[in-house]
Image (cartoon, rainbow, N blue to C red; front, side):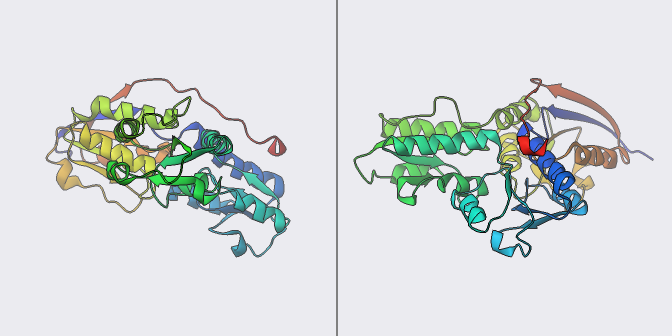
Length: 314
């Protein structure tokens, strides 16, 4: 017997963004064109369900090119982007490669290059060891760019040379936290140059805004996504900061915490930009099995962004 009524607020937009759609499509089209196996350097996007489904049709995931035994097979670079040395390494190995870097990450790469060429020293706001940050920092010589992760880093940072300062950011950061860091940088270095157009991408911004809209109405909030997904982790933080302290990441190894949901009248759900909608559906089906639910989807904006697939795959 279903033991209680439960109101569910469903954040929209949620789930796949245009860059993730494009990267997955690149893997599928590459397998169609070249046959299996096709190698992928790093997880194409940070989601276990996606990676496992692509493995089933012939994708082999590696962390470095030297792990690829058959160099005659093509390799795909993940949506997060790669340092410049990686395509150079592929060329030296005479490997065919397809770049699935999100175009909005590529935009940040070009910004870094152009700022470096114009004589600026770059500060990259981002998270250490995230593949996107490694890729962006690897676009220019290491002495031309420094990583800023926190307000504390801004306080401790001292200019290393007489070059003009400029900042760029990772695309999947918390909009609010980044604003605080940027404000502090501008206060400390009034001449610092900023991007013409914000680097945090439309999908990150929209998903965070959608969570903000509903979090304060919820007794508990679930973000469906992987533990290594930066944008999913940021959504959990946003939900907590927007009024729902009991906000958690629901990943592939999580069990539904029915004991906690029993204490709730309302819950909120969103999903990271690399989480397929089927995972949201499966989560809702589990909830439905125990509760009488009413679902209200709260949409803050319609997304219609698409990115082209590389011409050689069409």
